[in-house]
Image 1 (cartoon, chains in turn blue, red):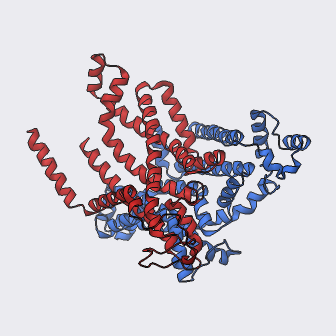
Image 2 (spheres, chains in turn purple, green):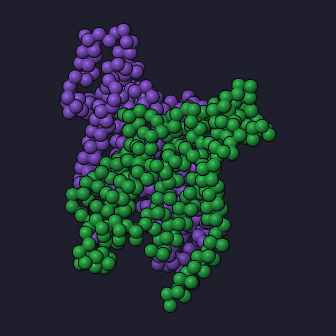
Image 3 (cartoon, chains in turn red, yellow):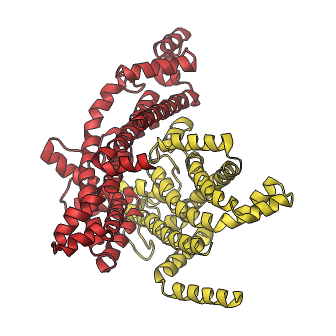
Length: 316
Length: 284
């Protein structure tokens, strides 16, 4: 319990530091945001400048601005976009479904395929299938995701016409059709790490005594794998899958750009190109928070899934 | 005794090398890429920015070996000339990150104390920014451009290298020869830089080669997003992005050729890096 509290406190502290870095970095950026805000140079009168400064709290010291921003964030107010003159929270809410749908789809793909390949490699360890799986997934992980995406579009969208070239689609069936190639591009790089952890974790179990005992009772090979090997190997696999999902929540920027999906990632790219600092701050904060919260939850839940971890800590 | 041992070692190494065509092939390919980076401008048949509106989206022909892009520029020449920029970026970022990272890592291992605590806290905060997020933050603040991307990536990689250096330095500093130098009255800086660092180089080198592949991939990704190299550069990531519009029209070469070039170099670097760290690590 104490360890859990310490973990949560550590996460909170890191988040405060990270959020301060995100906020103060924008504050330190060269160029005066007032010029972006007013836009038309003819309107740059001293009164207008003063009014805009007051409206966006640009006349306050850094720490006051940070405090105003942070207390706004906790109230669901992420500021106002310089570019669209709309609440940032509303813009992000309209972009989130596409990104979350993409991450969910990719998560299903890499979990099923990655664990499947890992199990296959572990069962056939030391044989041709094993080295083929390890080699192929490692090779795939060396390809940048935008190259994979472009190859997929060239072959399956343009040449074969199976999938649409761009967009996120409307509704569930159309969404699946639109997001299939992006989800593949997003998940291919993670297959290597997930299948390797699965394989490693299972191979360790294969050599243990309880598996030998199960085999000695005459249990069929498949049953041994499912009941005795895989069940004891879950811990590291679940951790790795959750870690990959956590970093995917912040890692859709490139794939969204390749496939023209208007999610959170492409919003970040647009906001950087148009110097829309409130949007950049909000998206970066969302990504860091999502990543940290998911990884912390996994850390806290793992002892509940696998009681051996808790006891090991206690005896250590 | 020692001579026969090293002889056996050499023979075993030679045997391993002969049986490892993947490593040899990757090394040869990387050698070729370095040659292209050095002499590409002499070989390229056209200047990289020679626009020819009469030859837009050209197919491969004797005049244009790989065809032309959306502005009628020769793809083969742009690929050759982009090699240098695509390789120098990752090299520069790695050099910067290594100098900062190794210095911090060595000091943290040697002194412990507040430097060590500070390093741990910095890496904690860095790990809160997954993937390229820290680099994107720096680019959002200081504007895009190849050098902003390189500096930002160097800053992002420095804590990782520092952590790695610290871990191998700690085990190296525990060895008796370090105490022997101390007893002789050698200064801390002398022991750390002249005696300990050379012994850590093999382990560091393998790690840095793998990081080079990662850095090349990250820089190309940033250029693809429009945050790194800017037109009219023929950096490979930027070429992929500029050629992407041709895909819908059925012109795949302008975007696939530089894309596959990036992938091929990263794959070769990773193979070499993994084999190097296996070999150098085994010998250390």
